[in-house]
Length: 219
Length: 259
Image 1 (cartoon, rainbow over the protein chains, first blue to last red):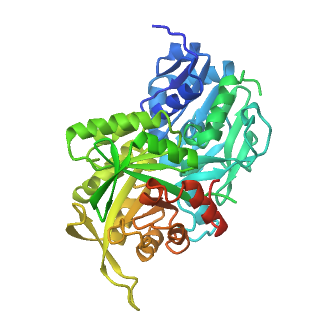
Image 2: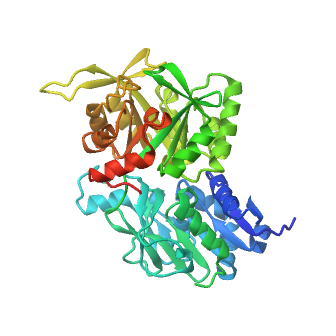
Image 3: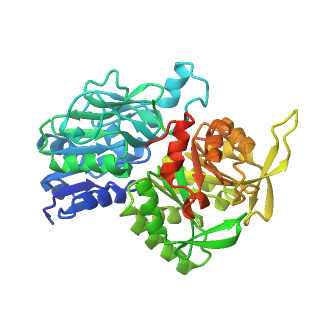
């Protein structure tokens, strides 16, 4: 059955997607927000959100077993696509979580573990807690339509143990620091992805989602 | 600048109403949970913790509806604890819109439940709640000893609170919500010895809870207890201070907060 929806939130059976759809519904009450895994509906949606929580192996496993990897690759070329948290990590080339997992490769970066990095850099154990949990500042490194009406240095809610290093990430448009500079927002063509949870980041998070809803996908 | 210390108002909810007790008894009504959560959100709360203290099944259904309503209006993280005994309970709360669940008694009776839950839902949404009482005062040789109690503080378990926190972290807990039962509701400040001992023993964030009576207490939880977040109920519920007042005061004391 083919449905026509304004926004498709990809549901691949992991975690809490309700907060994403509730936040979208709150800022765009007139739009149809659909949550599901039907490839045709996702391909025909006006814009697509690829969220995620939990472990990357399970996330990628579920995405692939439902054939959604191909769908996301296709959507990334044709319409605005927003990756959130593990969704953003799933867009990278490879993650070192779960002993190493290949991801979608929409970006050429790798996902690393905070604890290993802290250990390597000789940071005393427990100095910085893992997960990186709470409200951190994001510095604007490049302008982008999704930064509209959001201050440079605004705080967003993060909760994650794995990260993409900002230094090597040429697509980063927002950077946060937690022992190391991490890519908090990345963008290229029709793709925008965030490591934090905009749906849980109060006014600035809702503003970012509003900006996404108004974005035509050309950065 | 970097990660902010969090201020978390806590709602103890019984049958759809926010209540507050002193040392887990002597309950006072404080209002409608959704209305209160909305108010704290506007004041700049960093998260909301919702502790369901309802005993009945009907009350649990009310809780699910309240969480759903709260999650469609308040866009900050929401932790729900109380009565979480199996994965089905976690699924139900996450589906209702909770971001994290607090596991307390069930972890004591079946520690593997925490492991199972963390594997299935991810450590980021598993908070292990610990209710501890001091059983040995601090001395020259030790920082003191705290034991875990269940059943509203009536039943000792013989489990050392600091060791337990470390074990739960190894089992996959992503955060520890640490309540001092000696201090709860008496408004004399956190048990900073307990808070510091646990915070230093685990690699995950620790939320200090129990005992806040003024804004200086919140500061002490961070500076002396080394907590990553501070939780309080009655100072906010009964209008003594707003969350904004608390953040302003903490910022003046040099603590990084989200304003």
